[in-house]
Each structure stands twice: as structure tokens, then as C-alpha cells.
Length: 165
Image 1 (cartoon, helix red, strand yellow):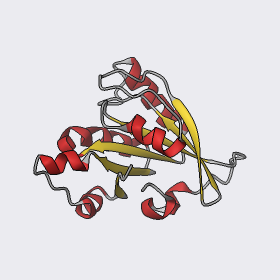
Image 2 (image 1 turned 60 degrees about the vertical axis):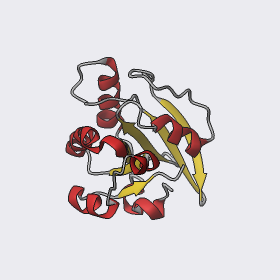
Image 3 (image 1 turned 90 degrees about the vertical axis):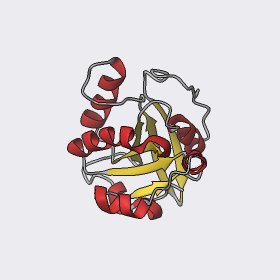
Image 4 (image 1 turned 135 degrees about the vertical axis):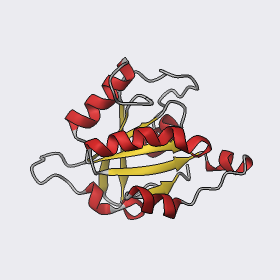
């Protein structure tokens, strides 16, 4: 479960200059990794989910209250890169760069981790406040793919959690 205890509370500390009472968390990832499903589970909203590239071309936001903390989650468009060659890439990059969320959760598909890591490395160059969430581990197990989340965390130098939604 994505909580402040499972992903490192220090990443979610409020900016001392902010008057906002909530933590802002961006959900990033490649298309079709399950970002919108995670977003819906965290916020109780019903953001339309789809299985095609370019499904979300705008940011959706919703709130989650957990242990007396207010979290604003922003589901940014699925993208393979933030190099700004498409509308999705530009929206995702601009949100992470200029809105400066308290943390960015990068959702990865466990069945094709290598393809998803490119985006992780690009976002790591923008902000150190990231959490990697590995999704679709049940699908990976069917394909006989095993991922050591602790080792991945050590290699990346950031918290890595699994999705239980």
C-alpha cells in the first residue's frame, strides 16, 4: 500500500514556504501501467481508464485522507519520455518541473521493467523526490518474472514499493 510509512515520510514533508495544507503527489508512468487504476483506488474517484496510448492527455486530480493527512494526487498523462515531443510528454514534464509536487510516484509495469526505467531515470534528473511503484506483479508471476523490490530500491537509490490495489 502506498502510505507515508511504506514509501519514506521524508519525501512527503511539506514545503515550509507552502500555505497549502496538503501534500501533492504526481502519478507518472508509461501508458497502460495502471496509473489511473491506482489513482481511482487512492482517491475513490472514477477516472476513465483505458488500454491505449494517449488515453489521458490532461491531468486529473483527487484527494485522499490517510491518518489525518490530506494528499492531493495528480494523475498525469502516460508517457514513455519527458523529452517533449508530444502533447502527453509536454504536459507530464511541465507538471513535474514547474508545479513541483512534493513527490512523484512512478508506476512501472513489472512485465516490462526495462522499458519503464527510462522514464524513471529522466524524472530522477528533475527531482530526487520519487517513489517507484511496481504494478502488475501478478501478471509478471504468470510470465515467470520475479522482481526483487529491495534490490531494485538499492540500485535506484529511491524507495520502491509494490501495488496492492
